[in-house]
Image 1 (cartoon, rainbow, N blue to C red):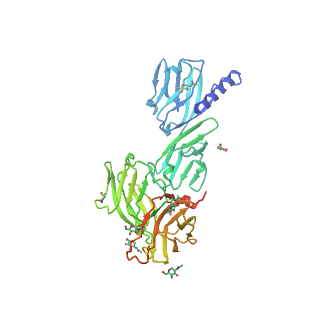
Image 2: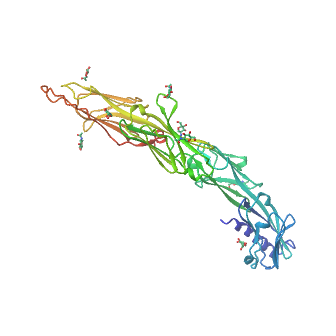
Image 3: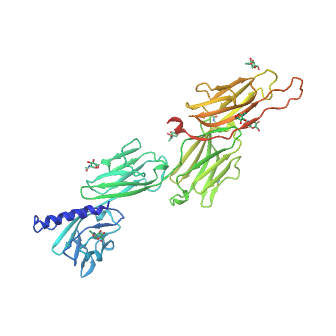
Length: 442
Ligand SMILES: *[C@@H]1O[C@H](CO)[C@@H](O)[C@H](O)[C@H]1NC(C)=O
Ligand SMILES: *[C@@H]1O[C@H](CO)[C@@H](O)[C@H](O)[C@H]1NC(C)=O
Ligand SMILES: *[C@@H]1O[C@H](CO)[C@@H](O)[C@H](O)[C@H]1NC(C)=O
Ligand SMILES: *[C@@H]1O[C@H](CO)[C@@H](O)[C@H](O)[C@H]1NC(C)=O
Ligand SMILES: *[C@@H]1O[C@H](CO)[C@@H](O)[C@H](O)[C@H]1NC(C)=O
Ligand SMILES: *[C@@H]1O[C@H](CO)[C@@H](O)[C@H](O)[C@H]1NC(C)=O
Ligand SMILES: *[C@@H]1O[C@H](CO)[C@@H](O)[C@H](O)[C@H]1NC(C)=O
Ligand SMILES: *[C@@H]1O[C@H](CO)[C@@H](O)[C@H](O)[C@H]1NC(C)=O
């Protein structure tokens, strides 16, 4: 809704009262107008019975007047005040103020003929602390500046009204909003709504959070397959002028060892990503300037752990870790079985199994099946059954990864040729699962 229509209405109300002769000489109604720092505001003054001169005063000083010709007083509003000639000929003497400053607040008087109109201007500003761009996990305090008993509410970047929650704190009677633990998803335009009986104003505030999308991922991969770690930033780094430098790196924490070790580091420049010459077996692609992808071919059991990507900028650092869980299978004995012998197939995961997951061996197209014991991240099957066996990991009925193993048997007792029958093939039906969904079954 047009914030000025409220004031126009209140002026009309004054007119109708006057027409009824209830108020004698006094032609003044006081209108309240809200404006935002840096923006334009219109102070209404309408007298349809006149079309000639007007004088606008602020603190008894003439701001601008039009009597035959336009003139301005020496006030701080000198270059920021304007009248609309076309509107004046219709009896609309409204004052247009631009580039509002806090010090512009106060009482304005519009004199048209023998009548005066008072306008109370209140000037507001939303400030953020810290100002400028923000980093994931930081806290942001938004405050409204400008004295008023007006009612203040806030809405977020999805246009929803902000209410107090764990991560949103309303302070100072709602005049300040503290946003805790910022996430990439908090980026966007937040708004402050200021309302009183006769005026209202919305002030937008742009929040820009540098952070990663999809925190907390787990990747389940079969041994010998290729794993691809994807780190996507919420912001194109090179678009943020304030960033003096951007450095980063990939670090790795083993399952058994609680410290991160650097795999490689890089620098982000306008030309792209500067990588060290020695990259071991990692393949890095960089989609300027916010997406890093790292491929690790032929992943091994010992590669399991957390792969954390971090970006360091002048203000601090943001990071995201992807948990790589590797599945592997072994057979004992290896190779074709001698007559009536059995084989032990072992399938194991590099990390503790989530409570909503199942690890199992099954004889493909057969009936034999063996499930892991509750909480065990490995499953073992002893069998004499030849054919294709498959170990699978299901999380909430979603197949995460599987490995096939073919059990063979020596064909004849007379044959002296032992053909190796071990055939391992890795199924590539792997998927990414956010930890969140693992923990909250829907
Ligand atoms: C009066 O003029 C201003 C511009 O000078 C305009 O924004 C406003 O809508 C006008 N008011 C009316 C009631 O016409
Ligand atoms: C502020 O606005 C809210 C919601 O519209 C209302 O419940 C509350 O009474 C208002 N407070 C004041 C002081 O106007
Ligand atoms: C991500 O994991 C970290 C550490 O495990 C935890 O503190 C944080 O709350 C998790 N975040 C989400 C969104 O689940
Ligand atoms: C953890 O790994 C780092 C790097 O490989 C090594 O220096 C450190 O000694 C390890 N700590 C333990 C407890 O294994
Ligand atoms: C990145 O910059 C830092 C500091 O200038 C330097 O020490 C490091 O070697 C650079 N790394 C690469 C991969 O260029
Ligand atoms: C499987 O073989 C092992 C020795 O290789 C033997 O001890 C065990 O009893 C056998 N189990 C079955 C069910 O045949
Ligand atoms: C299992 O059955 C499907 C269809 O019935 C068949 O296509 C597939 O080849 C079978 N696999 C094995 C290992 O027998
Ligand atoms: C992985 O590859 C190695 C080397 O080719 C092979 O010996 C091993 O059996 C493979 N493991 C699986 C589970 O496929």
